[in-house]
Image (tube, rainbow, N blue to C red; front, side, top):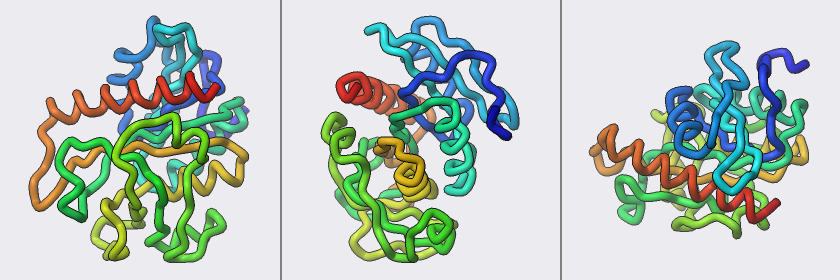
Length: 216
């Protein structure tokens, strides 16, 4: 039994990872026929069930920041997860990253010192699983993962977040196929409103679900 997650329902081989527990509930209600809460320990809400197409899927919150996401992913690997898509949020750094847009991570740059815990040197980069990435849809971009959003991002990064490098790098260590879809929630000093964010999260969830089902 993992030391953080305490599953009360079977965990599927395919998983969608979100930071916010509320977004995990939102996507569980949107994507699963009869979702069952599979974890509530430590406030890391997780849900498992069947999609409309009959595929088993787990939707698990990971908390905030890369270290938390890496720990949760390790527990999921112990519980049998083989493929994972991060559905997260990010800050747009270039005009091409507009509010509400769905970005498909093509490469993630480690722009924080915590990346060394996942086998990456600062400013090194990591790519998602190539096959899983090709099953997803969105504007392919380079993103930077920071330890704090107050840090400076590399010049070639289109957007910045807190978790993608940790998810991709830890997944590689655990031999999990992983990719990431990010919703631009902040750009040029403007923020996405809650209603539009929920709609974008549902859209991203459907893209992730279809990609996982095609991959499997």
